[in-house]
Amino acid sequence: MMIMNKMRFIEIILLPMLLVFSGCSKLQEQAEQLMWEHSGVTEDFSYLQYQQMDAANALDENGLYHSAEVETYEKRQEKSGTVHVSFARNDFLRFDYYRDEAFSRVLETTDCWMNPGEAVFAGEPELTNPNSKLYRFSEFVILELDEKGGVKAVLQNVKTIPGEVYRIPEDFTGTDISIIPIGEYLDRTVKLSAVSVAPDGSRTSLENGAWEINGKRFGNINVKLNPMESYHINYDYGPYREKLYFSGSTPESYWENSREGTVTFLAEPSDNEYMEYEVRLHPYSRMTITNGVTYQNMVDSFLDGAASIFGNKSVIENQNIISLIQINGLTRGNNFSDTEVEISELKAGDEILIRVPADLKLITEDIEGLTSTENDAGWDYRFLIPDSETLHYQLSVTQRNSDRDGVFHETILENAEFEVFSSTGIRYLEGSELPAENEKVTVKISPDEGFCVYGKNVKDNVYQDEMKYSELAAHINEILGTHPVKPGIIVTLDTEDELGECVFWTGTQRLSGTVMLREGQDFQFDYLLDPEAGYEIYLTPEERMMGIEIWSPYASSRTLDVTESLGGQTLRCRDFVTLQEGVKTYAEDSY
Image (cartoon, rainbow, N blue to C red):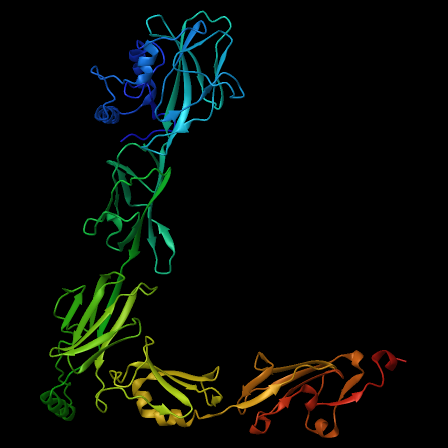
C-alpha cells in the first residue's frame, strides 16, 4: 500500500493511451518518459488503463494511442507563425485555449503556429475522470523540443489557472513548444477510532487496540490513503475482549470474530475525500440468581421435631432449585445447586431461559418483560438482557404463591381504580400469575374524575405505596379503609380584584379558576391591597380573639378550612377579610 501526500500521486496524461499531440509524433517516447518521472502512478494501475484502452480499440498495431487529431496533424496546414505549439490532451482535464486574456479569441490547437511575444491562455478545466472525484488539475508543464522531437528544456511550470499559461519570449530561437496539462489525485483521509460505549451513552476511546490497513498497524489516528489503491481494514480488540464485546461499527463490518477479537471491513467504493471507520465495544453484563428456597420432606420435618427435643441440629435436605439455563438457545450447564448462580459475559439483547420446578417462581426487580410458561418440567421464564445502565442483574427463586387458585384477581372499587404492579412496572391483570409472597409490588388507588382519595402516601390525588405481596394480601382491607374515595369539593376561585392582588394556594401550587379540593387540604390565600385604592384591612374583635393577624394594613395571609360547605361556591379574597376606608397615610401619622 502506498500512503502519499497530495502532490505525489500525479497522473500525467502523456502515457500513449491518454496522449495526443497536435505536432510531431516523435514526441511520444520523450513525453512518456516525462510522465513516469512526475506521476507516481503504480505500474499495475497503468497496465489496467492500458487494457481498458486496448479493449476500446484505441491503440494501433504498435500499442500507441491513435486518433483523428494525429491524422489531421500529418496533413499539416499552412503555417501562421514561426514556433510550432503542440498541446497534450488529458482525457480527464479538458481545456479551452485562447489567444487573449479576455478569452474572446479561441486558439486552434490542432496545428498551432505562433510568434515570439504571443501568449497562450486557458480557462477553467472540465474534470471528466470517471474513476474518481478526487482528481484535480495540478500544473501545466511547458517544454522546448528539439528538431527530433526530444525534450530540450523545461521552460516553465504553471500552477495557477485560469489565465496565462505561457508567453513565448521575444528572443525565443526555438521551433517547437509543447504544453502539457498534468492532473493529480487528492489523498483520501480516513479517520480510525475505537470506543467503548457505556449504557448511559458516554464514550471512552480505546487506545490498546490496533487498526491494520494492508498489513500496516495504526492507532486511533487519521491516515492518508491513495484513492485509486485498493485497501483492506481490520481492527483487533483482543486486549479488551474479556470485558468488552463488539456492539457495532461504521461502516457496518463485513466480519466480526468474537473469539479472536477482530473486526474486518471491506474496501469502501467511495470517492469521498474524508471517511470514518469506527468500532464500538460495550461492557458485558452479568446476572446473579439466588436460590432462596429450602426444602424439607416429611421425614426431615419429623427429624426436626425430634432434634428440637433432644437438642440436636436440624436435618435439612438441599435440592437443586434451577434445572436449566439457556443463553440464546445454548445450554449453560444443568446443575445449579449453589446458593447463588453467577452468569457472566452477557450482551444486551441476549435471550435468556431459566427453568424452575413447578412449585417455584423466578422474580426480579431489574428486568422488564419477564414472561413465564408452564410445562411438564416446571416453569420456563424468558427475557432479554436490556441495554441499560445496570450491568449486574439480580434474580431470585422463591416459593410460588399457593393462595386460592394461584392466579391474580383484580379488586374492583367504586369511583376509583385499584392497581397492582410488579417491581418492573408490569400490571397484574385478572387471571395473570399470582406474585410470590415475598415479591415486591406497587399498589395504586387512582380516583375517577371529580373524586379524591384520602389518607397517607397520597400525591397528586393518587395513593401509591410499595410492599411485599404477602403484606398486601394480609392488609388489603385496611389499605382500602384508610384510603377512602369521596367526591371532590368543586370551587371557583375569582382572583380578579380591583383593590389589589388576590392569590389562592395549595402547598406551593398557585390556583385559579374552577378547581377541585378535598377535605382537610392545605388551602390558603394572600391578599395584597393597593395603598392607592383607599382601603385597609380591619381586624374585628372576634378575629383578634381568634389570633388572626395581619402583617400590614394592606396585606393578609390566611388558611381556610376546606369542608363540603365550600362546594359550588365562588371564592374571593375580600370575602374573608373586613375592609375599611383608609383614614390616614403613614406620612400623615408622623405629624
